[in-house]
Image 1 (cartoon, rainbow, N blue to C red):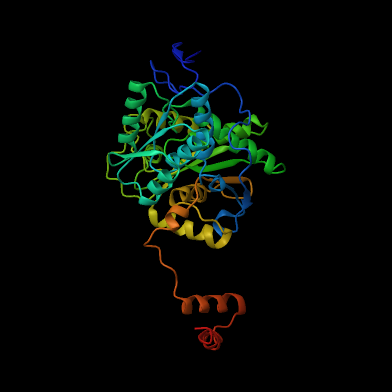
Image 2: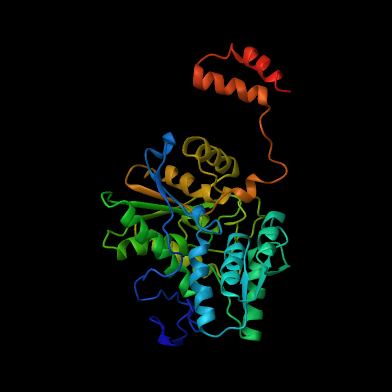
Length: 373
């Protein structure tokens, strides 16, 4: 047990929120390197708008997102406490990461996901042996049910919000790795896509713990559901729950914050205090950057991750002293049945123009191809 820095109430070590005053509690001890054992790559982007910014590719984690770090910590602590099982609420990445970590630990897992979660996610979770229940139309419903189940049956709630102190703490590993991977770069700006913010704050704190200056934080959200970005744009002191329809396909960050908007306010205050920004992008912009990341940098990232480079560019702080955390891989979106591939004749023309500077040879090559049919 520890004490709330705000009201003095006693708090369980794993709790990230005081039950009395709901003040966010960050773990006072520095990150000590538990969780995944190998660092995710950092590469320099070739996208012109990013002007040489660095990309931290969290999709390279075993389960395809930064949530691997979080669930490695939370599941490890659940096992150490003698838990008989665990509950997780998720709109995608946390479910897969929790199922992966629980499979390695032999811990039964109940996964609660919104009914809007794509079929690909359900298959990825089921493959790992977790039990899946679909409920509600967004993260708020599943988070509420997870809290009730965990309380009623005394099971660990593997929350990937500030509610679990291990979430932000685990994400400090991102910043610690960046400090090692970019020893000669003074990182002044750190960007990430967020629903409520532990990943970006944790990465920034990890960089500072490694002896670097605290970076400016730039958070990206989707315009179709961006409650923190909306409060930032309006200059409001408090974040409100998202009341408008959710119109974005960036489901990993499309969080109304119903019941925990105060966590968004805490994150917004922290970003503002450091001179940062929380900016939202429309889905067409996210799709544009997803294509650019694939074509310029060879990276397949999920649509939600693209809110980070969108915000970084819009902030005016893109450049070689900026690092953009790409939170998740795009495989589950790339493998959707509605994704099309360019006809081979058009593709051949594109290649000839790009590589040979001459598309007049397409007809000749087509004739060669016909010999193999």
